[in-house]
Image (cartoon, rainbow, N blue to C red; front, side):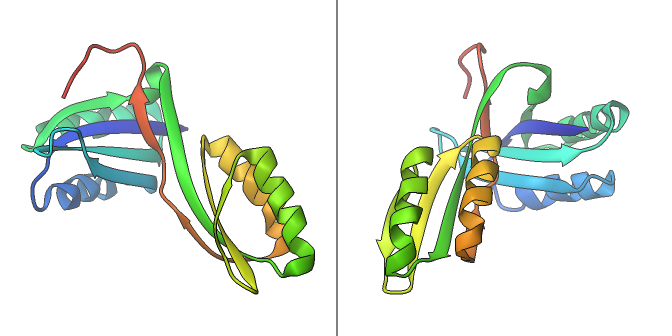
Amino acid sequence: MRHTLSVLVENKFGVLARVAGMFSGRGFNIDTLNVAPTHDPKYSRITATVKGDSQQLDQCIKQLHKLIDVLEVSDLGQGQFASRELILLKVAGDGGKRSEIVQICDIFRAKIIDVSQRSVIIELTGNQEKVDAFLQMIEPFGIKAMARTGIAALERNRKLEL
């Protein structure tokens, strides 16, 4: 089963390595990982999607709580949360294909952020299902390169925190 974890940590050197090491030590493969400072630069939020059963996940959460620089751990799968992912794609796009690529981008509300003679670079944000559907539509044109951020997520209806 897939789980989304939100981990609030102190923004210090080595914290990410310790958190990632804890996941691997418990046999979790991290599917996506997103880390960035919060509005307070003293803290960072780590959002990770992992696969495992509920018993493994419970043990993993308990181990995360034991790490010194971890302030809060939330299993976002247990409640409602908002999530988004960013993807940048370089797609083969000569003159003949470009109008079709633009139409697909319009349908998905993607932005073309760079154009050259042989390719276009596209930016898309959305939930994972939207990103996956866009990739299926755009793949036949030829994806030359891709950068995908992983999920950034916040729990809904929660008291205001750091």
